[in-house]
Structure formats: C-alpha cells, structure tokens
Image (tube, rainbow, N blue to C red; front, side, top):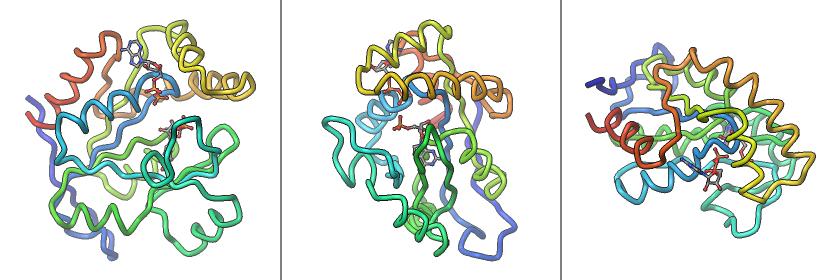
Length: 199
Ligand code: ADP
Ligand code: 5GP
C-alpha cells in the first residue's frame, strides 16, 4: 500500500522541516470533492481540513468560517499582497486561497492536513511542497459530471457553463497528480482515499 511521505522542502521560511503531512485533493467542480471531504472528516476527525478564503458569494446553507471565509475582492487582494496565502487562484470569476499561517501551524504540530483546491493552486502547492501527496478525483464520465453539477442545483447557468469549460482542462491534467481516483460508487471512492491516507 502506498504511504504518505512526510513533507520536506528546501524553503527558508516556516515551510522548512515540517513534521506533518500535506494532502492535496483536486478535481473538476461537481465531481464530489466536498461530499467526499465531509465523509472523510466525519470518519476521521483527526484530519485537519483547511478552510479556504473566497470572493464567491455563499451558497444557500454555507456558513462563513466553516465552508469558506467569504470576503470581497479588495480585501482578498490585500491579503495576497501581505503574503497571507500558501497558494491562491482565480476560478470561474472568483478568487480562492489557502490561509498560510493556519496550515503551516497544523503541519508543524504533526497533523494530516487536507487542501481541497483547484488545479492552479495544486500546482503551486506541489512546487512549494514536493512531498505533498496529490490526489485527483475523476468523474465516471463528462455527462455524469454535468448531471452532478446541475443536480446540486446551487449554481447559476452561467457559472455551470464556466465550471464545465474549466473541467475539461482540469481533467486533462489528471496525470500530473500522484493518484487518480474515480468517484463513481461513492463508498468505493471514500475507501480508496482512506487506503491512501491511512494505509
Ligand atoms: P465538488 O465539491 O467537487 O464541486 P460536490 O461534493 O458538491 O462536488 O458534489 C456535487 C454533487 O454530486 C452533489 O449533489 C453530490 O451529492 C453528488 N455526488 C457526489 N459524489 C457522488 C457519487 N459518487 N455518485 C453520485 N453523486 C455524487
Ligand atoms: P466552489 O466554488 O465550487 O466551492 O469551488 C470552486 C473550485 O475552487 C473547486 O475546484 C475548489 O476545489 C476550489 N478551491 C476551493 N478552495 C480553494 C483554495 O483555497 N485555493 C484554490 N486554488 N482553489 C480552491
């Protein structure tokens, strides 16, 4: 069984000699990343899920500080300038970023830290943390992906079109990742991720 390696980096900042492990979970919008994460967190409360910062508006039911920290664009740009993000990217018209300090502290304290982020951010993390384990979640088919985005019923038509367009490019990059897991049967996908994280 594949093991998750401790992180080593050559950085001179706090990124150096962390003791925890970093997992990057990426995949096209609607593939089921959030649902998989919720299930993993329920089963393994010792995991640390990094809550991202975004300029996207909250969807119905989303809670500030739990799903995301929702802020405006000028505040986000200010945080970028202050170096507050470990990575950040623009996705479908909104900014998304991973808070640097919180994640580094959790890694330093030995936690298994999971970032659920899109492709550009995953590339930035792989560049700064070469030993991070990267997992790409694939849909069983593109038609099924579209069905799931629509079935979620939380995005406007224009947002759905942008996400599907971006999904094609993301899926083409799946081979860059250490592992590819198809989220067809949900339980099988959760178990495949668990097998990688916990051996
Ligand atoms: P993402 O976080 O990747 O954008 P979500 O977790 O919001 O995706 O899932 C999108 C939709 O797909 C949700 O309605 C979710 O219930 C559904 N879904 C997730 N995994 C599966 C699966 N294995 N089979 C069928 N539907 C799924
Ligand atoms: P959504 O708007 O559907 O919640 O997320 C859109 C995309 O942004 C998803 O692919 C999600 O994984 C990604 N995302 C969420 N948080 C971050 C982050 O902090 N950084 C980056 N780069 N992407 C993120």
